[in-house]
Length: 141
Image (cartoon, rainbow, N blue to C red; front, side, top):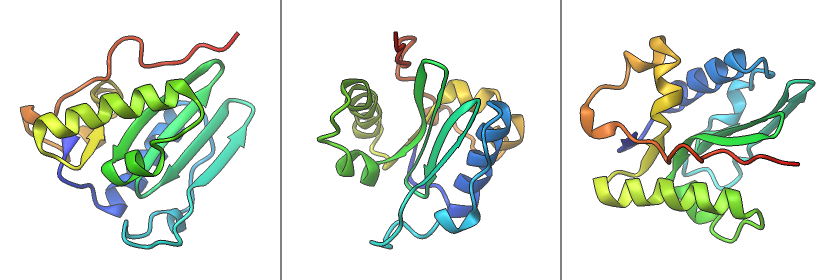
């Protein structure tokens, strides 16, 4: 799903829903500062179920051996273009492709969105739907 932008309150609510769905810690509201804030740092939240990374520019989680981006802004793609992890780079390139094709500046995982009906109601429009693909998760040995 590609978007022009998501508001900080929307991204915060989505991050909380993702955290609840995957039994991860909920982020603090303070991570969701305006995208123009150069001092904004993502939150890394860890428990026995896995990790959640979140800020106004992206949401990602890792549970077990699966890493997945849920929301990505173009700003985050550019920040991570030299990420050392090839799976992170692959997911970001795929999200950027959706953004470029649609002319939008953010991407949201359609599969994750379907699992959160309360959030889905806030985002409408068939042109927003998109998935990286079935292999958008990393399996670690």
